Image 1 (cartoon, one colour):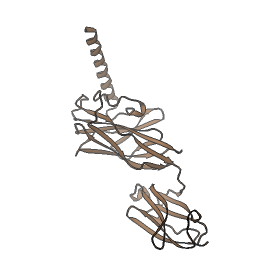
Image 2: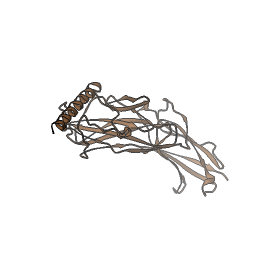
Image 3: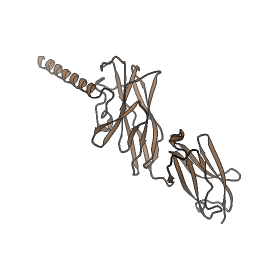
Length: 281
């Protein structure tokens, strides 16, 4: 019995030293604690995770290879005085978007995201913004997270609570839409006149999404072909696009339509523009 008590005391002392070392080495956040690495989580706050703390990620679930997209990590539950997190992508990269987060190297070649200081709860939910850059290959990626909700007394004890966040899956795909430019001088949304016009059987349609410098982070863009009666012929695009000038080919031979005038409509957020296109067979 004495041996068991002694072993428990040694274990507690070791963990206390470990917690202190973590606190000194990482005073503003930690990395390497997510399920990506098979880690035990935020055990420096509490040995067991709890379902009373809940975290999830919101943002596009599909991204074109090489594109960068903004996301948010939400946290609710627990003592809800202050909160922190660690975020890691399986294949892509995660980056800071403001002073609330920082990138820290976990192992060589793997830089993860964490907080720069605990974030105060002002309601029942807090969130951090970050961006994800997709890898240059077609695959299914995963973003892992771990979060803690603490009482803010500065002492990591079992009064604090943590949990792994819900895994967020991203489909990384190769878009048939080519990026013509990604220039800072793109100041506004625009739908260009197709070329050639008239066309048979295919034509190139180009549109622009304004740059971050213009106050935009990208948007869900939609490109649809209609006949003059308003009937939808084809949806050429309906997904997230970051800043740039894009081009897509509309091949009328893939659809059962005759010669005539059609409409191409480009919409993105509150912006909408329509142009006439002429098919001659």
